[in-house]
Image 1 (cartoon, helix red, strand yellow):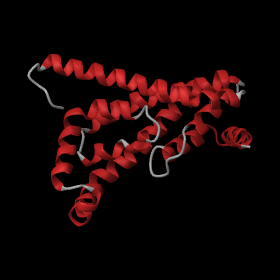
Image 2 (cartoon, helix red, strand yellow):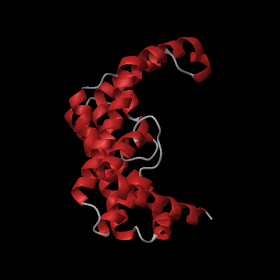
Image 3 (cartoon, one colour):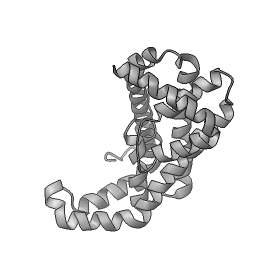
Image 4 (cartoon, helix red, strand yellow):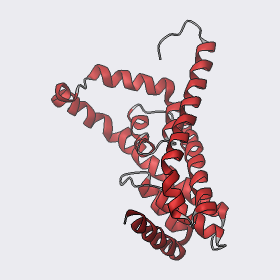
Length: 213
């Protein structure tokens, strides 16, 4: 039943994107990456199917996906940059004891993101669920916009490429994608851990006396 519904959803999106074109992919990825998170798999995998059928260009689908992800990330970034901290401070003061949040913890989180925001943003874009939310702490901590944009595009580019290729090579076999979706998530998490460990080793070599993140 679930497999059938998924197949129908993919077919619907394939038809919809055939009508909306690259702008439709851009808009859907913008929404997916910002205030209404939903799986980007249902956007870019069908797009990969259309590329395989010769109905779309790989380059333009890739650009639409990455630019849409960037646009959605910037929405969350600027919302958090201008509005988020004030609202979070109010919540911390009013309900901090309930949610185990206080000003000191918020300031500590800000310091962490100022110091390690680049690697956090990059890795966060590769992990489902987190990828939609990682722009918020970047905005809270007022992370440098150029660095935020670079690492967001880098992470979003890798994620978009993976999904497009999945659609291109396996899009006609939805059951195969469903069966291996968990494996893909685990591979991305393992890759992210390798990136993080490499980053920590580099930081440790730069400053041997540095023991705490």
